[in-house]
Length: 311
Image (cartoon, one colour):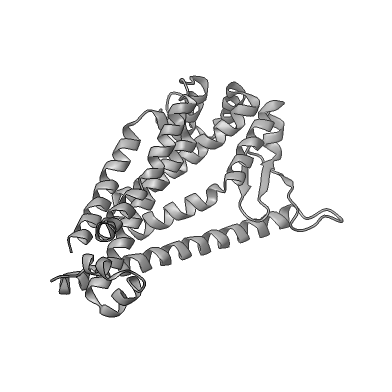
């Protein structure tokens, strides 16, 4: 069917053009939340193209599937989606895409299981090093102070999430810098960035030869940090947040003459210290609306024959 070929071509086009437009634009660093949404819309559009292609190719190849897909559709709609001479090509396409879908689901389940196992191990270790206080509930939302020689702070996803800060960080961070670090970590927890990271890692791990999924994973890891930085800077200032980042990461050797100028932490500090003009609310809304329409395109393409038949 021509429709199946069009959907597959649309998926490939979205997978190629979408990442290029997003990585070459300068606004994602200024508006990481909008960029996160735009990347998710691109990936959803690609997956929708594959899912719709699989559905229609399976309906064209096997009457049993077609009967379920078009069970309540008028006769004119069924004829508009008539398989014609699709035959073996449609069956092979449906099987290949179904295998890809099952593999994606398996990778996601594996990634979530691994993340939960890692989180359980880290929570058990944390419980051994910092036991509960008398009368404290085991699942209470609390700030955990951990004995440590290196300044560090992180969050443990879960219900509820745990914020962990080392004693070295408490000694090194001054005043509002500690508040900024905690606000950064709480920003991760409130936005549930762990789900974004798990999904992107599952797609990239399951399909290592597909560039769009690798780019999606890398950008998710970068943009969630920028979004959390903005959460902290809105409350405690960009300079305070930048200084907190320097204090937490100076011992890692990421600053100085021998450090990589393109490393993540120096780039984040530079972004905070040299803020560019933010997008106007109107343009931010426009970008969000355009990104939201991307997944709608394959749905509209899929329903065009049915709409024509009804018209």
